[in-house]
Image 1 (cartoon, rainbow, N blue to C red):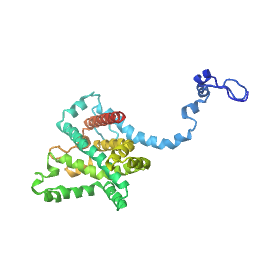
Image 2: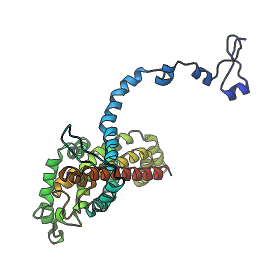
Image 3: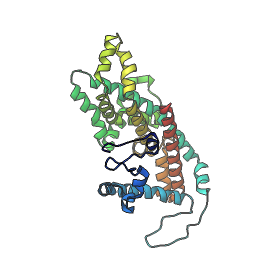
Amino acid sequence: MTTAQISPDDSRRGGHTSPLDGSPAPSRDARRNHRSWPERVLGRHPVGILFGLPYAVFIAIIFAYPLVLSVYMSFHRYIFTAPGVGVPRPWVGLDNYRTALSDPLVRQAFLNILIFLVINVPLTVVLSLVLATALNSAIPLRSFFRGAYYVPYVTASVAVVGVWLFLFNTDGLVNRLLGSLAPNPSWLINVHWAMPSIALFVTWKQLGFFILLYLAALQAVPKELYESASVDGASKWRQFRSVTVPGVRHATTLVTLLAIVTGANLFTEPYLLTGGGGPDGKSASPVLVLYQQGIEQNHPDVAAAIGVLLVIGVLVIAGIQQLLERD
């Protein structure tokens, strides 16, 4: 017998006969069981683990260990001590979470970040997609505009914050242009406008990065789809809705997730723009309150509880967003 003979029963079992002597060839499970234990543990190409090992160590040290330590601290009475000094750290259960959630400043910080995300995420997605679509077409000075939108993203936050303080303070350029329509008190010291102003600032600063993501995604949209839509008489707006938006759906998911994570980690902007979360905590973020509780007031256990709550909140929002995208 010179050819492999595969019977329906063999096919269902995943096996076939040998092409040399017609004897039944070992099935996939049998071949897997005959592999040595190092091969079963490390795979057929163990050298790949060596290449991935440094990043795995990096993730374990920078992300996994602090996260596990934060969870531990949030369930114990924990204080910072000098190196080598041992103090009892008793189990306190959910006391740190009760302390955190009973603090009006913490509740206000989580409400602030919800306001921030409601403003920042839709603006980021819509503006970056529209601008990327415009910059992907043949317009004059396209290279200049691509670089111009990216400049705020790579500029130091302290320098950019200085520009916004100049524009939005009481005697700033924006208030002079608006005249009597300008809010009083001014934007960054107004309890109603402080957090929306920070959301607009972060949207503007991060826009260049998200435009780049969309520009990369637009390169993968087949031009034949636009040509077919044009032949069918579709307008530019219809092409944008029916071709561009579905074509960059995965990039939109990525941009949304990154915008949510960026918002959850908000710290520098309220710290610099509104003097540490003012006025009256209306622009404080959970990370800023976490810093104040853990470092300035030496309550790392309560700060750890705030951090764990923040991580859970981000995971819930990201999960809901993933479910909506799947539907």
